[in-house]
Length: 140
Image (cartoon, rainbow, N blue to C red; front, side):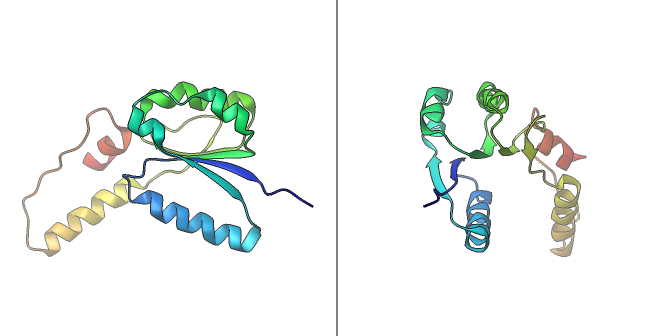
């Protein structure tokens, strides 16, 4: 009897991307074979560092992280040092040693501008986050 791959999925459930990623993972596992997925969002609510000892006890085969706050970077580097496969959609810079999911921020900005212009709104402004790479890329 084979055991299912154990994947730890850490995410912010306030982000709509999460639902789409979960649907994509579900489609993939139907084609490739089942995974056992452990979900954890509690660290977002507690505003604390992720407890690395919990992850070590769980013995995952890989980890998927979506929109982790910058304060979680020490956790990410511990995972990379463990040698676990890591897929990450960060909220700032891409992380070396992990598979990074990146947004096409130029395209997103272009689509937003086209949409506003199509609505007949030739004057608009962008309000973003000063220290977030994705936000700065969408501004330019």
